[in-house]
Image 1 (cartoon, rainbow, N blue to C red):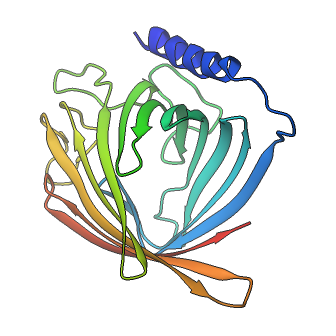
Image 2 (image 1 turned 90 degrees about the vertical axis):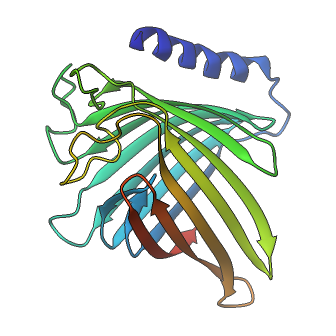
Length: 242
Protein backbone atom coordinates (compact mmCIF):
# COMPACT_ATOMS: atom_id res chain seq x y z
CA UNK A 1 0.00 0.00 0.00
CA UNK A 2 2.73 2.45 0.92
CA UNK A 3 4.63 1.74 -2.35
CA UNK A 4 1.43 2.32 -4.31
CA UNK A 5 0.79 5.60 -2.52
CA UNK A 6 4.37 6.78 -3.01
CA UNK A 7 4.19 5.95 -6.72
CA UNK A 8 0.82 7.65 -7.12
CA UNK A 9 2.01 10.88 -5.50
CA UNK A 10 5.25 10.88 -7.50
CA UNK A 11 3.39 10.28 -10.77
CA UNK A 12 0.89 13.01 -9.91
CA UNK A 13 3.60 15.57 -9.22
CA UNK A 14 5.63 14.66 -12.31
CA UNK A 15 2.58 14.38 -14.55
CA UNK A 16 1.09 17.73 -13.65
CA UNK A 17 4.45 19.45 -14.01
CA UNK A 18 4.99 17.96 -17.48
CA UNK A 19 1.47 18.89 -18.53
CA UNK A 20 2.28 22.59 -18.24
CA UNK A 21 4.24 24.33 -20.98
CA UNK A 22 7.25 26.24 -19.75
CA UNK A 23 6.62 29.93 -20.27
CA UNK A 24 9.29 32.18 -21.73
CA UNK A 25 11.36 33.92 -19.10
CA UNK A 26 10.48 31.51 -16.30
CA UNK A 27 13.31 30.99 -13.87
CA UNK A 28 14.06 29.30 -10.61
CA UNK A 29 12.99 31.36 -7.61
CA UNK A 30 14.55 31.07 -4.17
CA UNK A 31 13.57 32.29 -0.74
CA UNK A 32 15.10 32.18 2.72
CA UNK A 33 13.31 32.93 5.96
CA UNK A 34 12.94 32.16 9.63
CA UNK A 35 10.31 32.38 12.35
CA UNK A 36 10.97 32.95 16.02
CA UNK A 37 8.11 31.49 18.07
CA UNK A 38 7.40 31.49 21.79
CA UNK A 39 6.27 27.86 21.60
CA UNK A 40 6.27 25.12 18.97
CA UNK A 41 2.68 23.93 18.51
CA UNK A 42 1.80 21.76 15.50
CA UNK A 43 -1.66 20.40 14.68
CA UNK A 44 -2.70 20.88 18.28
CA UNK A 45 0.38 19.07 19.62
CA UNK A 46 2.79 20.77 22.05
CA UNK A 47 6.24 20.00 20.61
CA UNK A 48 8.54 22.41 22.44
CA UNK A 49 9.33 25.81 23.89
CA UNK A 50 10.85 28.91 22.32
CA UNK A 51 12.17 27.92 18.90
CA UNK A 52 13.86 29.27 15.80
CA UNK A 53 12.33 27.79 12.65
CA UNK A 54 14.35 28.48 9.48
CA UNK A 55 13.24 27.65 5.95
CA UNK A 56 14.72 27.67 2.45
CA UNK A 57 12.77 27.04 -0.74
CA UNK A 58 13.36 26.68 -4.45
CA UNK A 59 10.46 27.02 -6.88
CA UNK A 60 9.99 26.66 -10.62
CA UNK A 61 6.87 26.39 -12.76
CA UNK A 62 4.69 25.23 -9.87
CA UNK A 63 7.25 22.79 -8.50
CA UNK A 64 8.86 23.49 -5.15
CA UNK A 65 11.54 21.94 -2.98
CA UNK A 66 11.85 23.23 0.56
CA UNK A 67 13.67 22.54 3.79
CA UNK A 68 12.19 23.58 7.14
CA UNK A 69 13.61 23.14 10.59
CA UNK A 70 12.97 23.81 14.25
CA UNK A 71 15.62 24.29 16.92
CA UNK A 72 14.82 25.04 20.55
CA UNK A 73 16.87 26.88 23.14
CA UNK A 74 17.23 23.97 25.58
CA UNK A 75 18.60 20.44 25.30
CA UNK A 76 15.15 19.07 26.08
CA UNK A 77 13.66 20.58 22.92
CA UNK A 78 13.44 18.30 19.90
CA UNK A 79 15.40 19.25 16.79
CA UNK A 80 13.51 18.80 13.53
CA UNK A 81 14.33 18.91 9.82
CA UNK A 82 11.60 18.55 7.16
CA UNK A 83 12.11 18.22 3.40
CA UNK A 84 9.13 18.76 1.08
CA UNK A 85 8.68 18.23 -2.65
CA UNK A 86 5.46 19.77 -3.89
CA UNK A 87 3.49 20.96 -6.88
CA UNK A 88 0.78 23.63 -7.09
CA UNK A 89 -1.43 24.71 -9.98
CA UNK A 90 -4.66 26.66 -9.97
CA UNK A 91 -5.44 26.12 -6.31
CA UNK A 92 -4.65 22.39 -6.37
CA UNK A 93 -1.61 21.14 -4.46
CA UNK A 94 0.11 17.83 -3.82
CA UNK A 95 3.30 17.13 -1.89
CA UNK A 96 5.47 14.59 -0.12
CA UNK A 97 7.26 15.50 3.12
CA UNK A 98 10.07 13.74 4.97
CA UNK A 99 9.90 14.66 8.67
CA UNK A 100 12.92 13.91 10.85
CA UNK A 101 13.53 14.51 14.56
CA UNK A 102 16.58 13.77 16.69
CA UNK A 103 14.66 11.72 19.26
CA UNK A 104 15.79 8.35 17.87
CA UNK A 105 18.25 6.91 15.32
CA UNK A 106 20.50 9.23 13.30
CA UNK A 107 19.44 11.04 10.15
CA UNK A 108 20.71 8.44 7.67
CA UNK A 109 19.12 5.49 9.46
CA UNK A 110 16.17 4.22 7.41
CA UNK A 111 15.38 0.90 9.10
CA UNK A 112 11.96 -0.51 8.25
CA UNK A 113 10.97 -0.58 11.92
CA UNK A 114 13.56 1.75 13.45
CA UNK A 115 13.83 5.20 11.92
CA UNK A 116 13.22 8.76 13.06
CA UNK A 117 11.87 9.70 9.63
CA UNK A 118 8.15 9.93 8.88
CA UNK A 119 6.99 10.23 5.27
CA UNK A 120 3.73 12.02 4.60
CA UNK A 121 1.66 12.63 1.45
CA UNK A 122 -0.57 15.70 1.12
CA UNK A 123 -3.31 16.68 -1.29
CA UNK A 124 -5.37 19.84 -1.08
CA UNK A 125 -7.26 22.61 -2.79
CA UNK A 126 -7.31 26.34 -2.05
CA UNK A 127 -10.66 27.86 -3.00
CA UNK A 128 -9.48 31.35 -2.06
CA UNK A 129 -12.01 31.84 0.70
CA UNK A 130 -10.98 28.52 2.29
CA UNK A 131 -8.33 25.81 1.88
CA UNK A 132 -8.88 22.09 2.45
CA UNK A 133 -5.95 19.69 2.99
CA UNK A 134 -5.58 15.97 3.68
CA UNK A 135 -2.35 14.47 5.05
CA UNK A 136 -1.44 10.77 5.45
CA UNK A 137 1.72 9.10 6.75
CA UNK A 138 2.68 6.29 4.39
CA UNK A 139 6.13 5.17 5.56
CA UNK A 140 8.73 5.54 8.28
CA UNK A 141 8.05 5.93 11.99
CA UNK A 142 4.28 6.23 11.73
CA UNK A 143 1.96 5.71 14.67
CA UNK A 144 0.17 2.47 15.45
CA UNK A 145 -3.35 1.31 16.14
CA UNK A 146 -4.32 -0.39 19.40
CA UNK A 147 -3.63 -3.75 17.71
CA UNK A 148 -0.05 -2.71 16.92
CA UNK A 149 -0.53 -2.26 13.17
CA UNK A 150 0.61 0.73 11.11
CA UNK A 151 -2.07 3.39 11.47
CA UNK A 152 -1.42 5.37 8.28
CA UNK A 153 -1.99 8.34 10.57
CA UNK A 154 -3.94 11.09 8.83
CA UNK A 155 -4.97 14.67 9.43
CA UNK A 156 -7.67 16.77 7.78
CA UNK A 157 -7.55 20.56 8.04
CA UNK A 158 -9.68 23.49 6.91
CA UNK A 159 -8.27 27.03 6.82
CA UNK A 160 -10.35 30.17 6.39
CA UNK A 161 -8.43 33.47 5.94
CA UNK A 162 -9.99 36.91 6.23
CA UNK A 163 -9.03 40.53 6.86
CA UNK A 164 -10.46 42.64 9.66
CA UNK A 165 -9.42 45.99 11.17
CA UNK A 166 -6.18 46.11 9.18
CA UNK A 167 -5.07 42.67 10.38
CA UNK A 168 -4.87 39.37 8.48
CA UNK A 169 -6.69 36.57 10.29
CA UNK A 170 -6.82 32.83 9.83
CA UNK A 171 -9.15 30.29 11.41
CA UNK A 172 -8.13 26.65 11.25
CA UNK A 173 -9.83 23.44 12.31
CA UNK A 174 -8.15 20.05 12.12
CA UNK A 175 -9.12 16.49 12.95
CA UNK A 176 -7.68 12.97 13.08
CA UNK A 177 -10.06 10.63 11.19
CA UNK A 178 -9.15 7.31 12.86
CA UNK A 179 -7.25 5.75 15.76
CA UNK A 180 -3.48 6.29 16.04
CA UNK A 181 -0.94 6.99 18.76
CA UNK A 182 0.85 9.44 16.42
CA UNK A 183 -1.54 12.22 17.46
CA UNK A 184 -2.85 13.21 20.91
CA UNK A 185 -0.61 10.88 22.91
CA UNK A 186 -0.02 12.34 26.38
CA UNK A 187 1.57 11.20 29.63
CA UNK A 188 -1.90 10.35 30.89
CA UNK A 189 -3.17 8.73 27.66
CA UNK A 190 -0.33 7.16 25.67
CA UNK A 191 -2.68 5.44 23.21
CA UNK A 192 -3.37 8.77 21.49
CA UNK A 193 -6.43 9.25 19.30
CA UNK A 194 -9.01 6.52 19.81
CA UNK A 195 -10.93 7.34 16.63
CA UNK A 196 -12.18 10.51 14.98
CA UNK A 197 -10.96 13.40 17.14
CA UNK A 198 -10.80 17.16 16.64
CA UNK A 199 -7.22 18.02 17.55
CA UNK A 200 -6.95 21.67 16.57
CA UNK A 201 -9.08 24.78 16.58
CA UNK A 202 -6.98 27.91 16.16
CA UNK A 203 -7.21 31.61 15.45
CA UNK A 204 -4.19 33.53 14.17
CA UNK A 205 -3.72 37.27 13.67
CA UNK A 206 -0.84 38.64 11.56
CA UNK A 207 0.29 42.25 11.24
CA UNK A 208 3.20 43.74 9.30
CA UNK A 209 4.95 46.34 11.44
CA UNK A 210 6.84 49.06 9.51
CA UNK A 211 10.49 49.25 10.57
CA UNK A 212 11.77 51.53 7.81
CA UNK A 213 10.24 52.95 4.65
CA UNK A 214 11.28 49.80 2.77
CA UNK A 215 11.19 47.09 5.45
CA UNK A 216 8.35 45.61 7.47
CA UNK A 217 8.41 42.94 10.16
CA UNK A 218 5.49 40.48 10.19
CA UNK A 219 4.43 39.51 13.71
CA UNK A 220 1.68 37.08 14.63
CA UNK A 221 -0.22 35.72 17.59
CA UNK A 222 -2.08 32.42 17.55
CA UNK A 223 -4.31 30.78 20.11
CA UNK A 224 -4.84 27.03 19.70
CA UNK A 225 -7.18 24.63 21.44
CA UNK A 226 -7.02 20.84 21.28
CA UNK A 227 -10.48 19.59 22.34
CA UNK A 228 -9.30 15.97 22.43
CA UNK A 229 -6.52 16.54 24.98
CA UNK A 230 -8.08 19.67 26.53
CA UNK A 231 -4.87 21.55 25.73
CA UNK A 232 -4.70 25.31 25.10
CA UNK A 233 -1.73 27.28 23.79
CA UNK A 234 -1.02 30.95 23.06
CA UNK A 235 1.91 31.52 20.70
CA UNK A 236 3.62 34.74 19.65
CA UNK A 237 6.03 34.89 16.74
CA UNK A 238 7.81 37.06 14.23
CA UNK A 239 8.97 36.30 10.70
CA UNK A 240 11.98 37.28 8.62
CA UNK A 241 12.13 36.59 4.90
CA UNK A 242 14.45 37.36 2.02
